[in-house]
Amino acid sequence: MTQEEIDRLIRCPKVISDPPRKEMAEDRGSLRNSMKLTAKEGQREFLAFMRKNVDFSENFSIGLDYCPRDGRGRVCLLRCNGPHGEWIDDFHDPHPHHGYHIHMARPENIEAGFRAERGAEVTKEYASYQEALCHFVRLCNIDEAVKHFPELEQLPLFDDLEPRNELP
Amino acid sequence: MSYLDLLRAQFNNRVAFREKRPGVHQLIAPLYHEDGDMLDIFLEQPPGGNGLIRVCDHAMTLMRLSYSFELDTPKKEQIFKRILDENGIQETNGNLFIDARPESLYPAVLQFAQVVSKVSSMRLFRREIIHSLFLEMLDEFIEARLAQFPFQKPYYPLPDQEEYEVDYCFNSRPKPVFLFGVNSVSKARLVTISCLKFQNERIGFRSAVVLESLDLLGRKDQARLMSAADKEFPSLDDFQANGARFLGRDLA
Image (cartoon, rainbow over all chains, first blue to last red; front, side, top):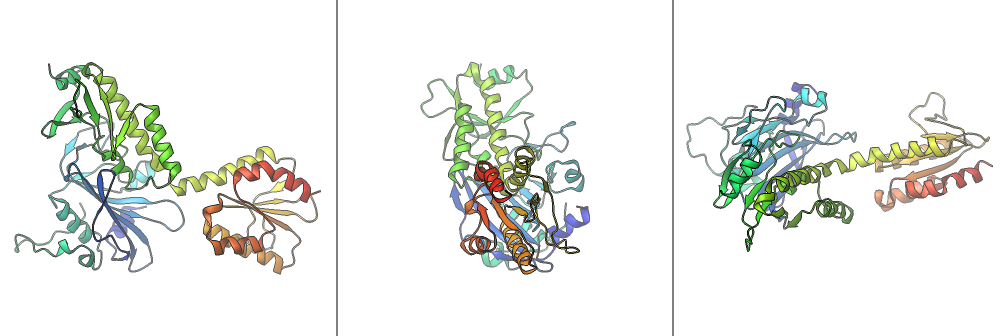
């Protein structure tokens, strides 16, 4: 996959083909939800998952997997994480970071046989699970998400801020 | 000396701690998942204390595993439990933990980190990976154990129509045996179509199918496949046990 293909898969307009539960379900210490998405054009399929740790609510992850139909196996394109702990980009020259961060698939990772989403970047786009969900839905261009996530309808605190939806 | 100071000293001062909640300390150590995220390991007093320290993950390992893999079958649970039992780790409501004396915290933490990695690697048992292993194992068996029956792989019975492909053609007799490995619904349908096509074209053959497992196909796909194919082995184990006898009988 090239970087353009990865970006296109993340950004392409999507519809919710199998909606999430109304409430996250608790299962073995974490709250869980998921939904299936289909690209509006081209019939590509995706899975979005949402997880939040019961003990530490700041430990969350909202991710987008691409599910190719040829059985190659799912690829994680994007994962918006809370500040669960530290992370590094380079195992050989580790400089740990801490805070809200986003994992994103990179072509060099796929080519090298690493996890596609290895490494991450600090983000200031969100500072809570709800804000992360909002950012995720905007980034992935998910149609009518507010129908299933009413919390997305909450007005921003500051009206004069432009919504930011650039890929990190 | 607190147990944290003791553990820091045991690690030669190469680790740190961050207080996640009162009394719950997160270990900051160079132990990472494949995506670069640090292993989630916490230290705290267990209920009842008894002078022990609990090394645990507060259900983070299973939460992370659930991004791409669910423990939703008895077999998966069995494997998960086996990993824990063989490594002396316990689990309560998703929280993996081991209780250790302060002076044994260093080996306990390393043991725990290994288990976190092993459990996290269960995602490699995902269906698409298991599916591809089935075809490899079928191929290995045929190459190693059925070499007395000459075969071609793959085989195309219809000239210029390579869309109708046979996985293995055992052709030591005028009426060959076409063998197919079926590990998905789409493959089952393709095999059904191919067998019917060959019958339509009046090709002389016998067909045999080796299923990855009986619960792979829904009722209708199963019925269509059974109607089109002459013989169905419900699993690789069954084919390994009876395949040679079947081919010997059919090709005699």
